[in-house]
Amino acid sequence: MKDVLDALKKAIEEGQAKDAARAVRAALDAGAEPGAVLRDVMVPAMDEVGRRYECGDYFLPEMLISARAMKEALALLRPRLVATDVKPAGTVVAGTVKGDLHDIGKNLVCMLLEGAGFEVRDLGVDVAPEKFVDAVRGGGVNLVALSALLTTTLPNMKVTIEQLKAAGLRDKVGVMVGGAPVNDRLATEIGADGYAEDAAGAVALARRLVGVPA
Ligand code: B1M
Image (cartoon, rainbow, N blue to C red):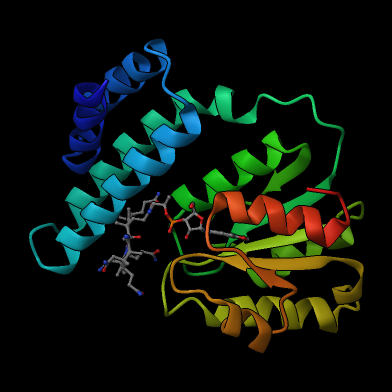
């Protein structure tokens, strides 16, 4: 099993999508637990890609092909992560904020929320505040989940919350925020209802915000 998981990590780090897919299938066939594969192998592989980018070993194209490999591997885990017989817990409108194209973490949060019984309306990436407002105005929404990976796009979380307020909708929904540069303090400062560090934490937070027992 260790060889398979090492091969998966290497394939994501080096952007070999086919090898990554092959390794995920092999790991699942050998009985690996999908959550552990994600947490212990795939997420650290993307962290390593970020580290290589930061120190100048990788450039944008390498980051991009690693992201593609990660997404292919994630697609194979998806059926296992979202398999659920949990009662509907509420509806979440999710998206990566305006100016930000990072969606792997947001997709993961959406998958685990679905797996926990939430209906998820994923608005995608580079989502303008008005789009979040329109989605909430449409009705039936309990939570808004905002993701941001860039320090430069963090302010758009605040703008989105302010636009919800201006539209008179802020009190009707819980707002949760997350992404690598986000923290508890920022969440409080911008008027969000909570911050989660990772996708599993996002599920726990979402349950708390809608009053569903963990
Ligand atoms: Co970008 N990028 N990137 N990038 N990229 C980072 C984020 C960076 C940290 C890399 C680095 O320098 N080390 C850096 C940001 C620095 C900063 O602002 N602090 C960076 C940069 C600078 C950039 C560009 C500006 C580069 C450039 O153009 N010069 C550019 C910006 C483009 C844009 O968005 N406008 C850019 C582009 C890209 C790609 C397109 C090539 C690609 C994204 C592809 C895609 O997502 N479809 C990419 C990638 C892959 C990364 C890294 C390497 C990996 C991100 C990732 O997918 N991680 C990243 C470095 C890193 O994070 N270590 C980096 C895996 C994922 C599972 O984790 O997304 O953190 P993460 O999600 C976690 C938690 O954060 C949390 O749960 C998730 C699962 O546990 N979470 C939430 C996320 N959202 C949440 C919401 C919640 C709760 C929890 O509630 C609502």
